Length: 273
Image (cartoon, rainbow, N blue to C red; front, side):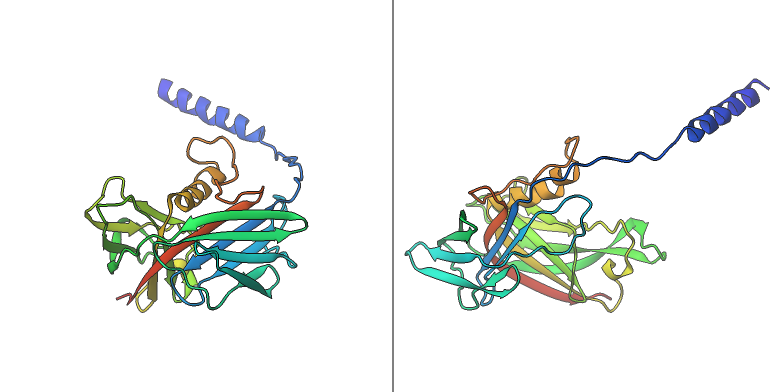
């Protein structure tokens, strides 16, 4: 009887709490837009691209807010300057500039009397030896089919500190999760890393299913770029002991947000069984 009274009391207390719930209208202040620079130079032809945009307020849509009219160049360590031309609003490209490992490149973006710069070096390529799939033993897809993840296998060089970014494509659809690795605990070793993408919205197009073509792009990146994506994945979402979201770390100078990444690219593709 005492237990019954206790449980009834708990239920009534919970009901009272739920009856007190009300919607909270957060008053978020609009902020002054900031320029956003996303620069990439790879060791592949056609891999040179800079996206220039401006930030938006929290309540705005997520459409790309491209900015036209900028002067964008990349210079190498021999002082050769390569212009990037606008191919669409906010997207600047140079189809012939190809990065070379061991060389350093300087990005310059001029817009509305402001100049944003960055410098980054291209590290030697680390071969992506193989990729294969494993089943998650604890979690299934929304429809009950086994959830699968990619394992990337490569040998980390012992002589250098290495940082990696992986980009996953399923049937040419880019996975939105940020996938990173470093050699803090695997320097000089053979590495088998599982790429744990987070499908919170249970989108079937993001799941790896039989017959899907899965491509993994492996980028050997500098520490500054690793920190950008790490902070974007954690601090910018309020994780990693941060009470509130914050801007990710940037290697762009002059007041803009974003990053300039000069990296090699390795790719492997498989068809899911």
